[in-house]
Amino acid sequence: MQTSDQTDKIIPAFIKAEHAAGSAKKTATNPHFKSKYADLEAVVDACMDALKTNELAIWQSVSEDGQRMITRLYHSSGQWMEGYTPLIIAKNDMQGLGSASTYARRYGLMAALGIAPEDDDDGNAASKSAPQAQTKQAAPKAAEEPAHVKDAKDILAKAHAITDPDELAAFLDGCTPRLDKIKDASEATYNHVNKQLDAIDAALRITA
Image 1 (tube, rainbow, N blue to C red):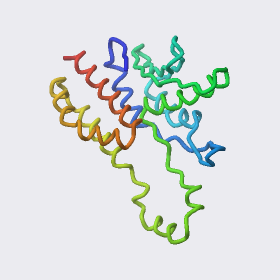
Image 2: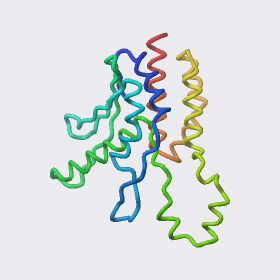
Image 3: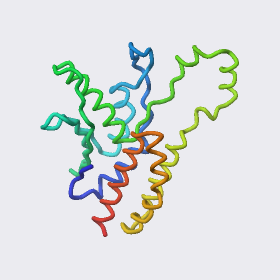
Image 4: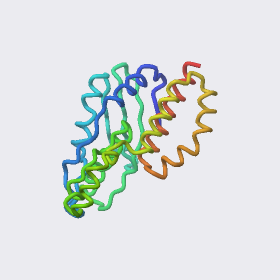
């Protein structure tokens, strides 16, 4: 992750926007797997209001070498933060580039703001037997937030409360096993947490 020289304004705005962003609705259908997914429009809809309220804007573009999609978050102050998503093109033509770009933009934006697709069990529910459906109704815990997401939020909340870079480094050393578990559960969540921790560390070292 890279940032502008100063991040004292963008980081507080980013934290507020991240907390306010919603889940991306799975409104698009994959014709090959007959499953629903959150397309780029749904991801943008999930975060646009939160971005605008906190004077933030997203800019995305293919890097000069054509290997990465850049996702940059701008604040009205001029401060910025950016990350990269690998651009993997299956077909060497414009259609392949367009498809890969849309995919990379979607995942880059989701990773940058910690957006997760909402649960969608329409297809699965139709294939389950009646007893299984009844079991699901009796167990509302299935809709609860995943454990790795809760752990990621707890780590970030505690990191935000730290005001000394050395103390943050010691805290993160102790979080290594927890971060490894998050990585095993979700690479996207792990990458998002690491980006946020890098931003917190950078902000502390600027003000130290």
